[in-house]
Amino acid sequence: MPWPAPVTLTGSYATLAPLEARHASDLAEAAAEGDLWKLWYTAVPKPDAVPAEIARRLDLQEKGSMLAFAVLTPNGKAVGMTTYMNIDALNKRVEIGSTWYRKAVQRSRVNSECKRMLLAHAFEDLDCIAVEFRTHFMNRQSRAAIERLGAKLDGVLRSHQRTPDGSLRDTAVYSILPHEWPAVRAGLDFRISEER
Picture 1: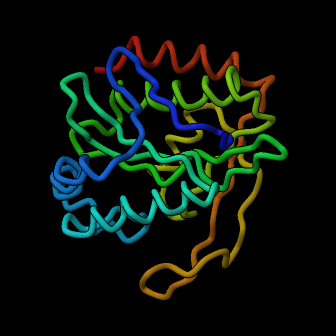
Picture 2 (picture 1 turned 180 degrees about the horizontal axis):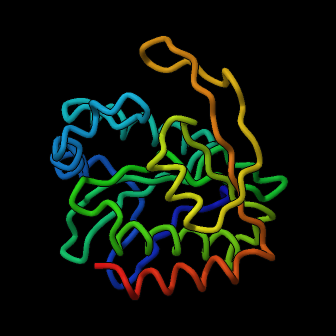
């Protein structure tokens, strides 16, 4: 059995379901809303590239380095994707990443609840020793969202990766540790109760 094994996580505002090819149509529509794929500092697929992105994630899942989820609203519509990635089964560490949402649900209860479900599963079910978040140093919106969670900045990996346009990406690395999870959970619960 792979670690972590595929699982469905269900909340009040969203469900994280194992990513499947059947989610492609909804996700292409989600990527098109607000032209998310045009943002230079993130990696949202073009609407017509969504099937290939789903296939890429599922291939990484098959190899054990990723666990891919579709983000579903209560009506069953896929509005984004997220993953556990850079999985280190030996040390029980995961990174929550490769996450994007359609514009209409960004900074909403859907996003907050998804983070809460992923973190709860990581710390309470998988017994992780750390959960990491990484983002482009220039992605201020993503960095602010990670910091609002209560994650701590571990550092910046300078010239860490090449972006699709060939430029070099500095990567900001954050983490949450098990002893920090109760406070992070309380903050997320409060935020979910206050958000739209």
